[in-house]
Each structure stands twice: as structure tokens, then as C-alpha cells.
Amino acid sequence: MVQEPVVTRFAPSPTGYLHIGGARTALFNWLLARKTGGKFLLRIEDTDQKRNTPAAARQVMDDLRWLGIGWDEGPEVGGPNGPYFQSQRKEIYDKYIKQLINDKKAYYCFDTPDQLQQMREKAQAEKKNLIYPRPDKFPDDKDVAKARAQGKPVTVRFAMPTTGDIIVSDVVRGEVIFAAREIGDFIIQKSDGLPTYHFACVVDDELMGVTHVIRGQEHLMNTPGHQALQDALGFRSPVYAHMSVTVSDSGGKLSKRERPKALRQAIKALGDLDTQKLAGAANISVAEVEEFVKGKNTPDMSAVDAMAEYLGIRLPEINVVDFFKSGYLPEAVVNFLAFLGWNPGDEREIMRLDELIDAFDLGRLTKSNSLFDRQKLIAFNTEHIKMLPDDRLLGRFRDYLKAIGSPAAGGDDKLLARLIKINAGARTLADIEKKCRFVFIDNEDVQYDEKAVKKVLLKHDGLAILRAVGERLAGLEVITPETVEKLLRDLAGERQVGLGKVAQPLRVSICGTTVSPPIFDSVDVLGIQNTLQRIKNTLKKFGT
RNA sequence: GGCCCCAUCGUCUAGCCAGGUCCAGGACACCGGGUUUUCAACCCGGCAACACCGGUUCAAAUCCGGUUGGGGCUACCA
Image 1 (tube, rainbow, N blue to C red):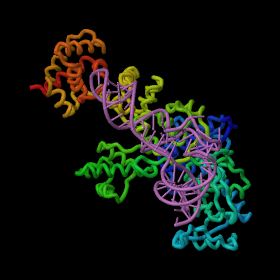
Image 2 (cartoon, rainbow, N blue to C red):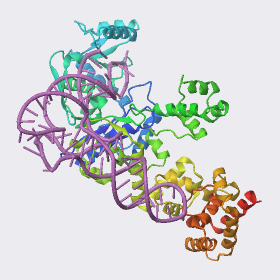
Image 3 (cartoon, rainbow, N blue to C red):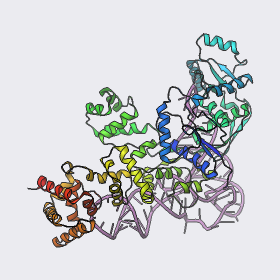
Image 4 (cartoon, chains in turn red, blue):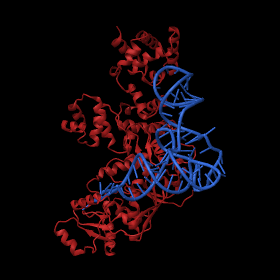
């Protein structure tokens, strides 16, 4: 489908890190803009003074950049339609609100939250939704002054049409019909003077020239209100596409609350617990920890993360940054996200960003909700690790090592590239890192896994074989993966045992565990001196 | 409760709009086997779905209605 260049936008509310669902919305908007040779804007919807933080906008932008989603207009890059922070656009909104009030299409209200709550409960009792009772006569400026003098909250409501249907023509759902009178007069200006989302979004989309709005299905019910607003203001309506929602594999909507929930369950399953130490690790009080475990409160994200890390519990990834820290490639995350509610119509699945752009088509959005399947994400990640060019992968690996504070972060390019190579087939960067840590620790700091020692070293002549391996290795003149392989194979042959019986004791000796990169490479990368020292240490520690 | 959306393997989905080529295709997961110095990767094979009821039609996964189930919204949040 060839299309005219479109203008799309992503309009996050900066309340924290970018949520994976938000990333998907951003991606679809970005893909459409790129596909059509149009523009993609970033607009920060920070009209909620209570919830938004300046740091969060920064984080959202970092996360988008990590994913490879850049914006043509918006914070930091500028553009002709700024400012791109809604909190800086108050005069613009005020002008349009004034216009609506003058046209008698909006009016002032002075209700307190309590009054509204009562009205709502009454409506609920009558099994109806609250349709705000519009006054016969709209308050004038004098009334407003009086209300303010009395300390009443002053808000502005939009006067919705009261008859007829409002038809939302949605790209994915077709025509959705709403009875105008069901919508009711909604607030467009809050008592703090800032516009609500509904108003700011309609005004900005018009002023910024947005032609296509791709957003979550949760906004479908808002759309008739937005269209009525556009009519009242003399604006054109953009093309709407309401995507399906992504739900979690633990049931329910994919939500930020899943991390603390998972942590709480894990803690309960753990049984006994040193709350003192846990509180220390999370830098919160013991009382807070106890209340959290009981489900009475939830500390902030950093405390949750700290507790999980301290306890060695893996929490489900929810924010984009969580995926980064779990060792996923942005290429894989983006590819996976694109397939949540979209597909190219042929049998391709593993696709690069440029292929995604090329194949993208709004008409192929899926209607039904989809479940976020982490297993499939891992499979995508495995494929993308395989196909990413070496230098790019090295860069990603470096970024990852730095982010998690790995001892491997100090490795030079040549070493790191080698480590990646000998771990071909790895599922995540985290897997590679874990298997390579042994290279970066001191010989004396090898932690021997109890089960590995029992199973490999203390059985089947493990120690005796290890001693023989050590002796021969010491006499080896040229150390390469190939010479090490020959040595081990010869030894296994002489002893009439499988290679595993020779390789495993050596592996446990140098890594402390039964899992490592291929043993010949492992020895080569570690270096002969370190290898011999570790063998010596092992024999001393477990030998009789 | 009201309003709105959705419904194909366990999961993501193709097919549906233009009914027959679909006893429904792919991928992930799972199961079995192979390869193998561990893990991962890899190779081969297998299991597995049109929610239900009615209607239209020579013919329905595809069109229509209802039922059931799931989801969303119902804020001076976005």
C-alpha cells in the first residue's frame, strides 16, 4: 500500500521509565512515518503536575534511542511546532479554551471533588454512568470571580453534542458508533489551570500537523469526545488506529505492578528472611520491608530492584530498560514488539528494522489482544544475536556490561569479541556474560559449585584426571584451542574414557561450575598460567 | 452496572473483507529422537485450534444474529 507521507507522534506522559507497551505504540507510529517518508514527532504530555518528573522525560528519550526510534521533531531536536512539552504551551491552550467559552461550547464549573463523587455514586446506584448535568445557564465571569473568592475549584467543561451519533472511523476496527449523549460533558481545563489530556492532545495534534494517530485500544472510548472537540474548534480529525492491548503472561494487563508483585511472591516462597539485611540492601526501613511483604505498601522501583538483586530473584521485565539489563538486543525487542498486533502477511518473522519499515502496513494491524510471551522474545533474541554484525554486537555487549557493572566491562575489544565468538548460540547477552565471568576473576576467587565438585571432581577419578591434565598442560609448548583439544583427546583415549570425563574436571577447576564456553577455547582465553594455577588450587583444596 | 472492543493450536499468528483450492499454514513453547566436551545452538520427527448455538448458501473458519468467554473505558491520569 503506497501512501502519502504522514505525520505521526508519540506522546508519553513522563511518569517513569518507558513501559514496553508504550514502546510498542511509539514503534508503530515511527514505522508508519518511516514507511511513508513522513515525520515522527515526540511530544511530552506533562500536564499532570502531581505525577510527572523532569527526570522521567529524559529516561523515556534514552529508552527510545536505545530502541533505535528517533524523532524528527521534539525535545532536544527542536522543530517548527514547539515547544514540545505541554507544560510550556499553556497560553496556546488558554486561547482555545477562551474561544470555546465565548462560543458557548464550553463552560465553567465549581464542583468540589466530593460533590462529583456523590453524583457518581448516585448514578452508579441507578445503574448508569454519570452524565454531567449541564446547567441551563453557563456561569459568567462574575460567577467565576465569586467562586474563586469563595475558594471553590474552577474547572472548564466541554459542552458535548447531546443528540445524534458520533462515528469514529478507525483503521483497525472500522466504523464504531457512539451515541453523543452517552459521552457527557468532560473537563478540558483542570482547577490548576492546565488542560486535561483530552484537550491538550486535540489542540497539539492539530497545531503540529499530526495526520495519523496510532494508540492503544484504551483510547477508543475517548475518541468520540476528541472528535467533537475537533468539530467545535474547526479542526480536522486525524486518521485513527486503535491497536490491541498487550496482556501479560501472568494474566491481566501488562503493568508496572508486576515487578513488586513477583518480588513479594518470591519472598514469600523463600520462607525465612533477614529483613534487616534486606532493608539495608534496599536502603529502606525494616518496617517498610515488612509492610511490603504483607502486601500493605510498595516501595519505589529502585528499592524493589535492589531487593530483587540482593535476593538473586529475577523479576519480569516491564520497562524497556529492564530488557536492556536482562541482556536483550534492541533489534530483537523491536522485532518482537512489531509482531504483537501486526505481521507482514507472509511467513517471515525475524526481521531487521529496515525490513520492518519496508513491510509495515497499517491495514495489517490485528484486532485482538495479544499476550506478551517472554519465551518467544528469547527466541527472537537468539536469532538477532546470530545475525547482528560483529562490530554492532560488540558495541551492544559493551553497553550491557557497563550497565550491569560486570567485571568484564574492563575487557578490551579483542578479548570481548573472542568471548562473543566462542559463545555462538547464546540466547542473551546475560548468558554470555555469565559464562565468561571466570576470565575476569582472580585465580583465588573461583567459587566452586558444591554439586559440580561432587559430581565431577569427587567421582570417576576426577581429581586424578585433573592432575594428569595439569601435568600435560604444563608441558605443552604451543597453546591454542587445537593443541589443547589434541591433548585432552589423547588423554581420554589413553584412559579409555569419553572426552567429557576429561573435560569436565578441567572445566570445574577453572570456572567452578559445569557450564562454560567450549573447554578448549576457555583454556586458551584464560591463559595457560592461570589455568595451571587454578588446577593447582583445585587439587590442593579437594585433594586428599 | 453502563458503554465499547475482541474471539483460529498452550502462545504469537496466516487464512476472513472479495464463501469452495483449509480434514486449516508458519513460528515459539512442549514431547520424542539425533549431534555433542558442559550449557546454549543445531538437525529430524510429533502433538495441537476454527468458543458455542442458530441462520443464509449447493458450499462457511470465512457472511448474519444470538449466547458464552476475555479485554478496555467509566478521573480535575494520560
